[in-house]
Image 1 (cartoon, one colour):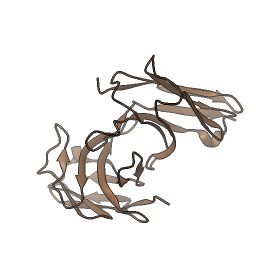
Image 2 (image 1 turned 120 degrees about the vertical axis):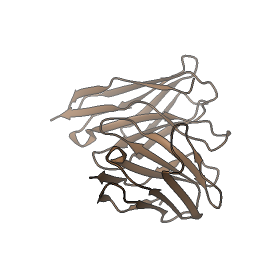
Image 3 (image 1 turned 90 degrees about the horizontal axis):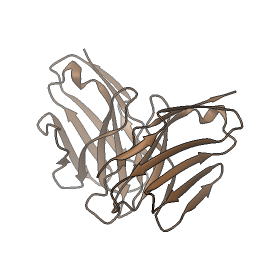
Image 4 (image 1 turned 180 degrees about the vertical axis):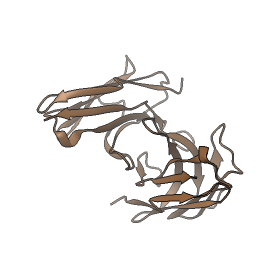
Amino acid sequence: GAVVSQHPSRVICKSGTSVKIECRSLDFQATTMFWYRQFPKQSLMLMATSNEGSKATYEQGVEKDKFLINHASLTLSTLTVTSAHPEDSSFYICSARQGAGDTQYFGPGTRLTVL
Amino acid sequence: QQQVKQSPQSLIVQKGGISIINCAYENTAFDYFPWYQQFPGKGPALLIAIRPDVSEKKEGRFTISFNKSAKQFSLHIMDSQPGDSATYFCAASMSRQGAQKLVFGQGTRLTINP
């Protein structure tokens, strides 16, 4: 149980385009979902926290207009990188938390490369 | 105050040996401490987690030791195997506050030599 999927697993896009990444909890309802980015050989950096039906809460330094997060249902959250640039190239990972539990279950990640 | 400091940055252990990774924190409000294992190109997977009301938790070859007074916790991997070669992250969160965000350590790249 507690499986989280992400789609796509990797995406290559041209500079200036927008890219949408989906995060789904497959076998549980996720009250809270989190979005992280991870640069090579570095730790996970939290970008934002989202609750179903509410606006996402962004961490300091993360541009909310650039990284649009939608948590439309208890099993789906999306991250849209708008007007992507090469510096946005990174590994994006989502996680989901069930109910009031502490455990975060992570998705397999999405490798974004912006040319 | 919100940091979790992890060491070592990298670790090489012989097959069959014990791998030990350490973490330290400052914020005494943290009350949930998970360890995650991450393979290259994959998302982190929860290995084992502990709360401060116990000093040790064991699951198979993985053991967390927790020292509340020292504000330190460690992961021990017994009988380390080449398949354990991965990056390990410790983390901490406050279970009764807000979104229960995880604060991650810097990660330890573990290599088990056959």
